[in-house]
Image 1 (cartoon, helix red, strand yellow):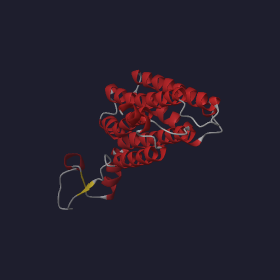
Image 2: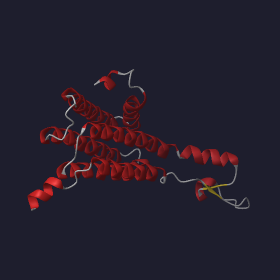
Image 3: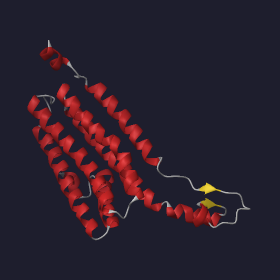
Image 4: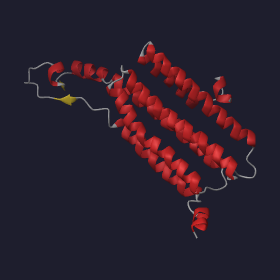
Length: 221
């Protein structure tokens, strides 16, 4: 009976895709909650902006918005990151004929990494010059990539791919994951010089994946 249950449990790709869409939608929404709107204050309050954190003039609003820049960078990077991994997961699911219990749990592990993204993004935004915060963010990227790679390997071994799915399509997806993860690791090493340099490199990689599919060689992998 237990063996039969394991054979029939969690076999719906549609339910898995629907759950993934919901988790991604919530995670992307949570990203923006860490960006706080500047606080207004009555004009008669005379203490300066840097003491109260409150805004009394248009000039101070510009200053307050400028101070949000370190939080906007991780937000934009993570928004594109989640979009890229959502596309990657959907690409995989489109090549699968069905799911099984193990594949479903692999993708649940992937979704756990998705739910961690708002935390790692907020941590990096708060401590953007700290290498440890960037390391935690990189671990989040590594988790997402490693689980997607495991999903591909397991699906091929378990015979879950569609009959017309080309083996080279799976190989291309695996190469893409490995290549990007290696480049993320190289980007992390740049934090020895400056964390902003690492963030800029990661953002360039994400933008390359999102908007330049026919221009940069990486997207032909």
